[in-house]
Length: 174
Image (cartoon, rainbow, N blue to C red; front, side, top):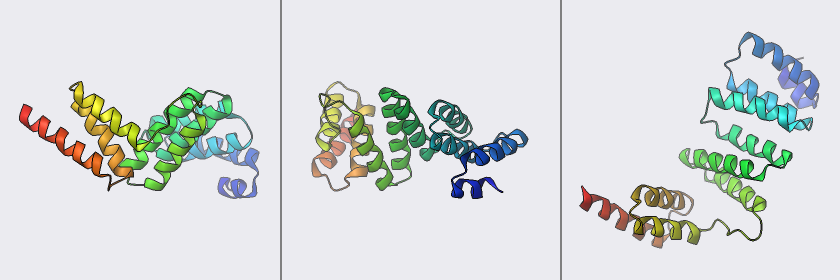
């Protein structure tokens, strides 16, 4: 039985054993490490899953789906701050790939992890952060925040105006 068949059948122990054999012969396959982590999480072994996911990410740090799985694993271990960091990285990678749906899903997961006392991630929050960064002269951060916001909300007029204003400030400095 292949690891794919074992995964589909829900026989995660067999899938892991098969994957371990494959990984001994070819340890440079991030997809195999990722699949092993999925199986480990399915068996409620988040600590072992984190090790497998981190190996996948060493091989391919731009694997958004692996960052998202890492967040889920950290969430299962109760490490909220690491889960949030992993969801943020997944969001960035999804936005870079222009996958707004998965980026928004990751942001929604972050919101469920934040204590009620912390501010929500919102359009206004990104805009306020960008304005504050601009006022502090940190134009790179301002542009980054505005670009994030515009990827999620491409028709946000306030963000567009602020983005243009920052671009003009940067041009006048050079």
